[in-house]
Image (cartoon, rainbow, N blue to C red; front, top):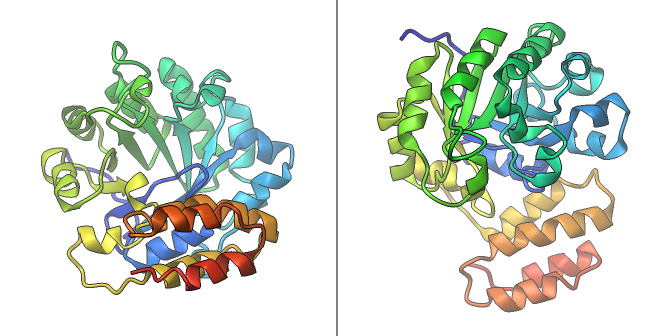
Length: 312
């Protein structure tokens, strides 16, 4: 099947929208190690509609990523989606992704995220509404294999998105009830890729070159999305592509912190605690470092611990 083309990216590897993680610091580091496209954390369409301040913070982008980073929205009301995709708050984002895969109960119970997969007609309406309001920007959607193991309908959802005018889709090869564990259904991802004439992004447990190649060669996807495998390991994009790279944990943490300087210090400190727990994973003294980091209230104190941690 001949597929429509997307604008060229520097790489076919994407960084997933990771709630609580894919902030500006993580995106900046991911780009520096070869990610072709990064997504923001998911943002509430209603939050944008009502001018929520926390939503604005998530949308902050650096000068170097303006015009090339994608934003992910979650919501279930086509009229609100149509309104917010054209807002000035999203003007820096050339790609707007609709979340149809979040498995978290508070999202699902509100009829958003993966709950949308129960209603392919609503999926098409939401994508169509986003396309109408987007002023020519690319609209995509990210969804799962299905809402449950007994309702695997990713192919139907992909086709609904295509009919609604989506530029591409991302499929996570697990059903909602599996969350982030269990086997990825590579066969289903392959079927999705074969069922639509728009590009498909494969997602699910991509954490090394072998899993990347399986997505590309067996599933036949156009792009591959790295999610949790990139947390604390921004170099994974270079590693997967067999590219030479230099990596220093201390420097990576400092770059990450610098890229969060637009936030209040207490928020930066709290956000970095979970990131650093991943950065130091595998270090001989990781338990001690994490214990000290989680006691921090100031950046100066946090940076001192990192400088003296003898990270390798």
